[in-house]
Image (cartoon, rainbow, N blue to C red; front, top):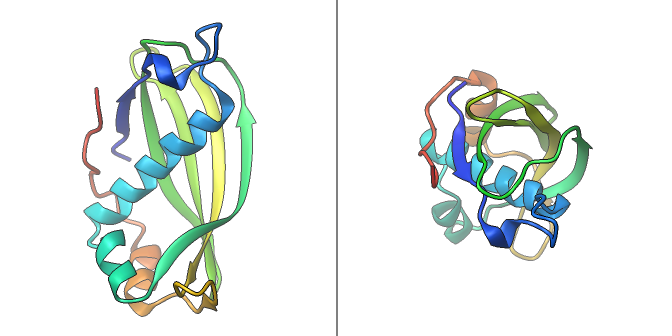
Length: 141
């Protein structure tokens, strides 16, 4: 898997210079957005068509603290899927040493702008079924 790279900035941390827990979720969102975009699923274009992806559930294991100035590598893959949802699995590691900071799973659903849950569109199901390793755009490293 080609990772998404990001260098932790001061605003990502708490007063002690450790990455704030919610920052990991924001980094995962950057990674899964890049992942889908690299496979031809542009979130902005799909939203104009009336299909929005949203997080239904998150599971997170924080294993080691990342700190200000660290460059992280976020790998993203798609796990199990049903007719109406699928799971992204993310691992956030220090890019040089490989130290694992967090494992995060996010269950995604497709909704209309009104919030009504949809069956996953065929084009998205094709991406899920392929689960190919397509490089994502490199972040702020």
